[in-house]
Image (tube, rainbow, N blue to C red; front, side, top):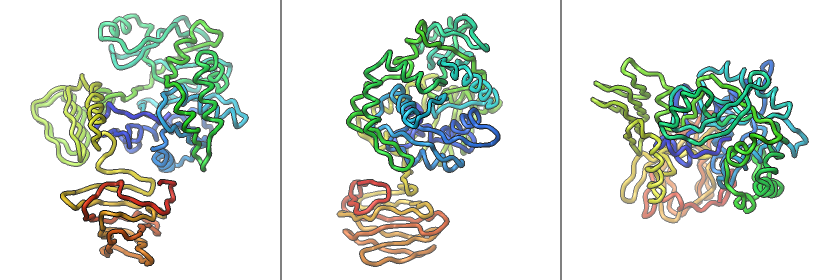
Length: 471
């Protein structure tokens, strides 16, 4: 499930590029790590299983690109036109498999978690698959290490088969005092959000407890359109689905029902990276308890998280803080209040500020652009176009453009002319001229674009042809 917005990891996480696509540690994104973990659970003898993903329509190319970077092709990418929480998302996945005449065990994972002991993770999930194959719903519970107030909890009952325990109840995120009582009791576990169950079992339970969600999701799925790996439920029908989580819709109602609800302990260094404090918890630290990434200099500082993405960050005499630097925004927060970052994000959204949605570097299906400078009547961008990719055939009413090739080969369409440009060559696109930029080569193309005119907004684009179906 790759549809989250990751607001509490702002400013690195934005609506157009949320946390599941970020590389916070190591060389792979959280989504890529999740796909590899689940592949290790279900694959055998080196054969890869095509993953099934549910994500946001706006992130469809990010999802596919990140999978292909690590050598995976998706079985399907189910695209939500609007967010409706995790219960409809899981229903879409189950319906996709049942429509194909299959009823497999689904190993369901959010795309924004981290695990430090993959071998233990694989063993626990394989055991869960065996239990789920017999009709049980299995949830993974994490033995708590501290009185955490940012997670929900599972109260475990007596031991059932194969070391699994029956679930007594779910409890929401507690206050600090209640979290301490859970830790002391010894039979409460963090709710990992990892579920293992058969597709038919999920649909039967959802139909029993929330028939409105089941029926509305089925209507949206039945009216779907398919385009390559992308499966698009009907937008109008999907918007009518009640928004609800897996826990509220079904899981909290299962204890005492005819469907077995079991919990397996997951001692694998799990964390859901729900806020910057969680990132600090799982990061490597120096002798003073500081976790830092990027160009960072610390002096008399302790137990801090410092993320520097584009420039030097110096910290002096501070303890227990989070500093996150990006090219267009900087966050400074008490580390223990990092959950409150969502308040800043909410204010940015109300003000309709770009920092709510976009990074300075904006990813597109064809590559990316980075707005490196701007002023009255001009803007400068660095643009990368993937091998074989093209921007749309377009024109602008209010700006002209100068393009300078930095590396690679550019195929430029300008009016009725088409030319090839290589490193250090340039061209001019007059205001109102129909044009296109393509990369015919096998290496990434990078150019510098200088825009000049009375209006430089991204909405000053008239598209005539577009490979990616944009208007």
